[in-house]
Image (cartoon, rainbow, N blue to C red; front, side, top):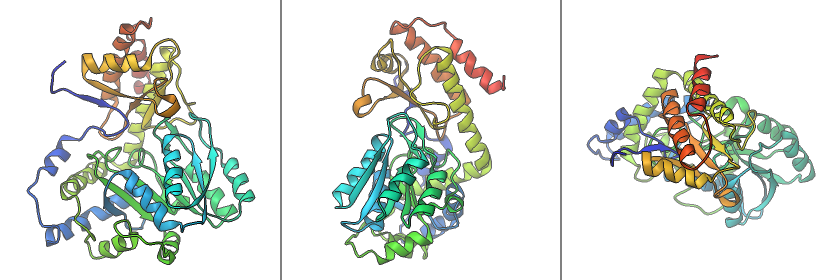
Length: 382
């Protein structure tokens, strides 16, 4: 392989479009200068389109987990009750954040690789009537599951007064998101996934209903006080020094999304998902999730007759291709392929070809080209 050629096919960080990289190399400006205010003003409508909202989208310098913690500390008081839907490692992270901030968190544990059922949420809310917030993941990165958050939000509204709080880190920007229409109260994503940027930004948007709760919350907070961000954003500013280079890149990302149109962005991700899944089916290699529960942004593969980690090592050593492994109890048992953001069907055909060679190298008897052919047929609509 070429030493400078790295093929990043993990579910974040993801590849950066060249025009975005160029935008981020612009000369630095003063974060309190009029140029920064103009930049923030330009960014607003594009972010609203991504989230499907008329609310302003807050921008924090920090990873996606910073946004998750901000949601917890602003929306729920110590000793209040919350429900956390755990369908994988990142649902479990939401639970741990709640525990760290003295919230009485209940769990719905769903087998890894399956989506939660709205009926499970309904039953729990009917049993525990003091729940103030329901935390969930849209795409569970660790398993490749896409949870039915529109249906869950509907159940939460109909059976409680709880806020619906969504971790959308590994899918917002790559899958349809209609925050206002679906009745979501808080939703978060990060810059390094479908948003086609390096790590370092978290985006968070809240409903008016959520703002009423957060305004009344007397829990101490400083950097993560979302009220401060809201007030400053109304003035096209930020309370603390923003990650300006990333904002330069974000402006270009939103331009690219507008040019492609969000509907086509979502369709591109759907096609990549189908191409990837049909390829592994053609190779008789099991997938962790069902077609119904599968995310358009990441696919989890669960081999039974070869080592997932051995395959990843071959792909990395011989082709410079990074594939993700499993987490927690799935470590060493699965590998995950990211297909989000700056990714296209051409990339799918590339990584499937590499994976087929790696399969042969680890001793898996396959017919070369069979998976790629299956993906090609998906693309051609056959």
